[in-house]
Image (cartoon, rainbow, N blue to C red; front, side, top):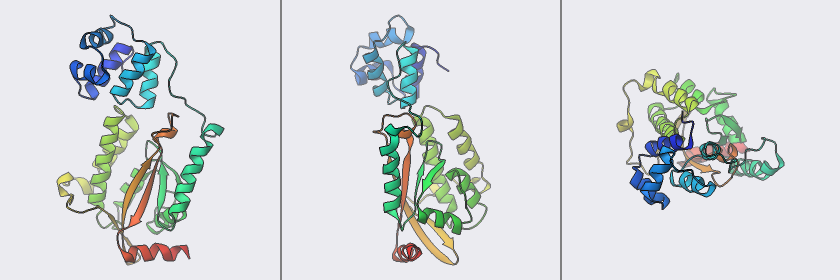
Length: 256
């Protein structure tokens, strides 16, 4: 764990696979000055920390850690969950979920914990035997114990790829790493890898078998990266859409 600004800067330059020259060009500073910052021979200004955090695409929490390591106050706020400042964001999430009915939509946090779900998503979880699903990776692993998801391996491989990409983006995350191991260790993935996914499709749906009905849904994900609050900016809304008319009709019928 880096405990000085220079150490943290070098660690994140390595994570992002930048040479000193590449990072200096990205941040528009001299390679010599960057070298001095990493070695501790030079101390950064507040503006320089922000510039380097941006060039390294640091998550907001890490950017705050960089500010603290350099002796400055945090640049991004961290409000209490119920703070009035965040009310517009929570309202936006609720509106997105409600407006997506009759099709499933969920809001999840950085660790794939379910924060909220619309009526269609709750109905889908119940039909899959996943009532009260609190985390989507746990739910996916539980679904792997049955045939409720026809293309479970394909769905799980894509989820695992997302998890690993997020771990890289965050520069490591022990909770996400634990979920990635949990999913990769599932017996049904023992002989599966990304080459088994059919990428020739326009979209890759998850295919559910519910009471003899075959339902195909694909997802799109909306993020809140423009929100400045550290935790709230990690919220994602995953909206599922029907890929065919029978699936569309099934969910529209549930609404009535």
